[in-house]
Image (cartoon, rainbow over all chains, first blue to last red; front, side, top):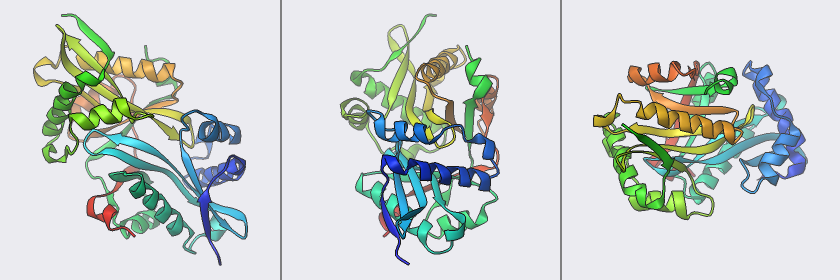
Length: 157
Length: 157
């Protein structure tokens, strides 16, 4: 099986959106996806400063996985890279596609001078955590993520 | 006491760097600060796409606090804003300066169309957590932060 990793183009966003929804369903957060294919096209390809970069994995010219990344900044380290989503469609898992996508993301981070690659994991997804730990990634203990969103953001004076 | 919140300029970065170091000491992570004043000037003001935006708080024309922010992207929500650091120098705490800085950050996020403001907290800083919760922010339960950095990043194939 030949796996091809390439930069996504605007026309891929329908399939990438399908992958995002598939991941949200897997994470039991189906209703959380509020953006659509058009938003992805706009935010990733039409903005003067696109909000993300996307890699896709192809097998037989069909998109079977994707990774969405963007730059961040650390007041300790400087430029860093964040991996927002890494998805492989269910029936294609376990064949090294996720691994190839992650390799590409990390290589891209190194080449662009990122001092750190960060991402988030859902605690019950022990397979994913194991997969990441095997590659040298570490869970940051003692820190929590905070969100201000929805009504609390809208109504904040 | 009159507190003035304004956009930082390049020349403020020395004082902002002092605040970053002060926060790292408070967080017991002193050795983690690897960037200097010049890096801040470069990354925030000289890059074609600056890596961060900074607000400072002034009292009597002296910088006593700062907030460092940048855009992020959520595959669920779209554009979001991240608050990387919020610092008030020790002897000026408890006078509403942090509150004014946070208000400015959140207003900026709302005006720029961010669907969410995110940040991280250190778990033992219960005063900070209380401060944020009082303003409608919520700790995201069940998710962890992962980092790949240092030697593990360098040696990743």
